[in-house]
Length: 127
Image (cartoon, rainbow, N blue to C red):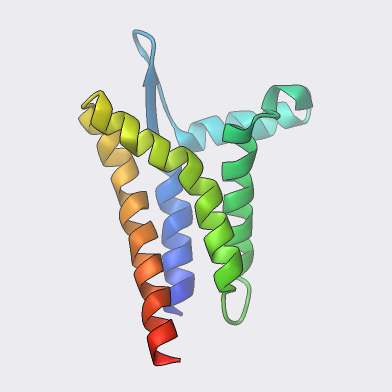
């Protein structure tokens, strides 16, 4: 059950990633994802980019683990890595430009990621 809760936490914390660009433009990742999904039906070429497809794939893989009796460690790690490609980049960007909003939006994901790694290490020691 703890594995499922951590995976669910990883999915939800990926939604709150925050981006700012230009003068007055900003979005949460969930807003961008909704836009990407709606564009997928009309202009598939607009969404073919690793920073778009990999995080979506990661969320899908983590979502699948929620329906498994025992969440797959492999699917969890692959999903986490796919999401981390974008969210760790956002986290590092928040540090480099010292933008508290960006940094604070990615921190829950990074913390949850480390909790998952620790959780699976503890399971390995017990099992």
